Image 1 (cartoon, rainbow, N blue to C red):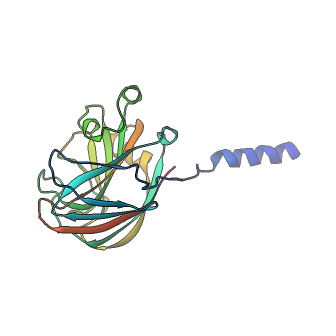
Image 2: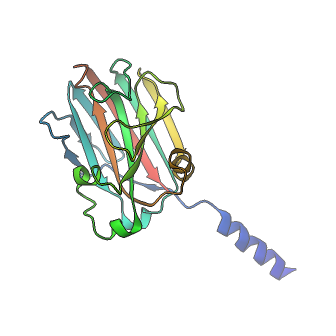
Length: 213
């Protein structure tokens, strides 16, 4: 009986989800422009990231710690106080959005050789794929689209353009399989963008409590 109880406890422990690890905004994130000089304003405040975009666009990036490269899920909270108008997220050069959160993958072989801190290079690499969760655009929640910028990027609409405050929990592995038809590779980096340059409008937003597990 005792052995049976112990075996049950072990089995239950093995099926528990991995503990979530917060990815802090601690100054380790680095801004990288999209081949232009337009720059957003980011304020890294530990658990929160304040974002201001005044007709600008750029990417804030950090490599994923090696111990989290196999993460299967993520969660975060986000707030938009001022929003860009609805746009067509499939239109290159006309796809402004309040916040886009990138989860960027590469192959296991490529992960051994690439510099995970070079976002611009990674996002041009043929081995790169990414799930891009977006607050913005004119499509309904749940819409999945191919990005007009790279064949390996998929846009997943979580919120249409507008203001508000929400918490998101996503199954990265399931979303990846649905978007690409296969399991994910190595999660090598995460990025945040705010994009208001095409509509020359203003974004005031915040991303907080970003976790991976």
